[in-house]
Image (cartoon, rainbow over all chains, first blue to last red; front, side, top):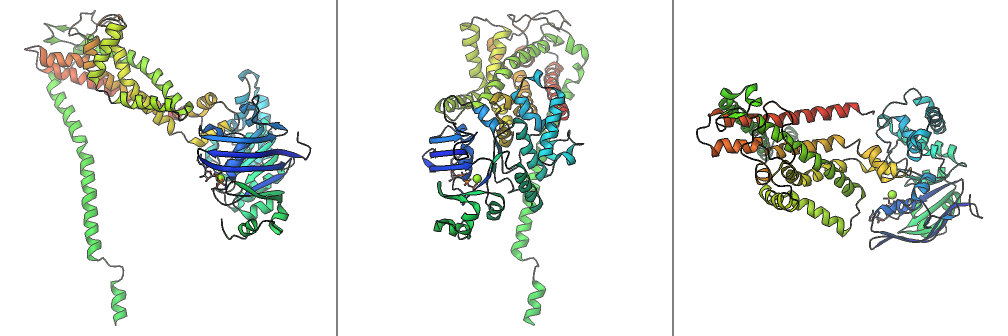
Length: 258
Length: 303
Ligand SMILES: Nc1ncnc2c1ncn2[C@@H]1O[C@H](COP(=O)(O)OP(=O)(O)OP(=O)(O)O)[C@@H](O)[C@H]1O
Ligand SMILES: [Mg+2]
């Protein structure tokens, strides 16, 4: 399920253009399997863009062009036989603003299953089990088991964000991408999500974009620092924060710009 | 001393502030006045029509045939004709318009071809109805050989309402937050699954409103149907609900109103007004039921 170096995601010479503007420049990186990797860097450096390459959602814009290769779990996702549907099943994405669908909690969790199975093959009991398992995994089951029919958009933000993670789990993804998942949450909510990330670590490869230096330090095993579309530094998080190799990394984590 | 007097005048109104407040009050009342003025014409029109129509208003007026060369009697054939035209034209334009709008909003990428379609839609919406009439005459009556008929008239009305339905449907679709779509795409839903699961359920009431607003346009237009399928007079069985065949010509309320007001001498005075009331009442009835439908749809949602 990974390459020889234990990488879940490998990019090789990845370039991406939005029209004439090059947002990613020769990005080559290997993201370790089963661990948490954080992407940091000042606004507009291409963190979101890179993250969105991993499940190819950038491509919905006609003016986006990419070159280079991205190997996910050993397979080049730009190969012609790759199905976007299967790819996105395996690579879940969590957004900055929690985006539960305006349907019940229950339906949110089973949404992926319904999308990917014939109606007749879904048994109520299986769905119920999937909901319980997914909500237990994200720590929402105790709070929500009696409120499965409430509209998901009425939950607290932290619960909504956890629900968005739970929604991915019934599809058994290998990789979970998170784009600033805590930026709309308060301190408790942030802690809740971070604890959830630790709980999920090992079974899933997690990539998290964050503006919060302390969060990158707390949560991630490896850290990638980006600047103007390039990867400047990529090492173990502890090393990056203690002894950054590049002066630009040092200045950024000290807060001289950003 | 100076300090004290300074403190005393702090936060009090200056001359400039007072002037701004007066301007603010004037502006507010002016806007309010215009908003209220909006309802005056509406009330005045309806009241005047009702007053003039009163001698003719009765159930018989609705369900009877016109008599004595349309100088007396009812308007049943015109009423039914209008229903035919409206229902058939919307049955054609609503599905086409809604599907086209879904394509444009949900599938189409920003290419020159799709821009061309957009441009066509916008321009079609601005074409005067008399031009649609002429087009319908050429295209449906002659070229397609439907002859002067309900089909030709309905299709002409459909072409006329189509661009507006496309525009209003696109607006309703665009109001569905992008985040919902992204949530779907990111669990591997196809566009069509996304449309079925989140886009349509969250925009259906807006779409229906847009479609139903076109009822009043289709019912009210005279030129397009006059050129293509409406006649001054057509005898039908009074009281029957399906008196016309599609290849027949038909009477219609808007056309009838025009006829009795301008083409026939010595019409009973209240008849044009009563015809207008029926036309207005039909449209209002449709609009009210549209609002009812929206409320019902909104309450029925599972969430
Ligand atoms: N859809 C788009 N079309 C055109 N340019 C875009 C698009 N999305 C991003 N960009 C540009 O690409 C660059 C990288 O954007 P990206 O969103 O990846 O940055 P980011 O590192 O995630 O920033 P932030 O920290 O503000 O979220 C920016 O200069 C941005 O203006
Ligand atoms: Mg971003």
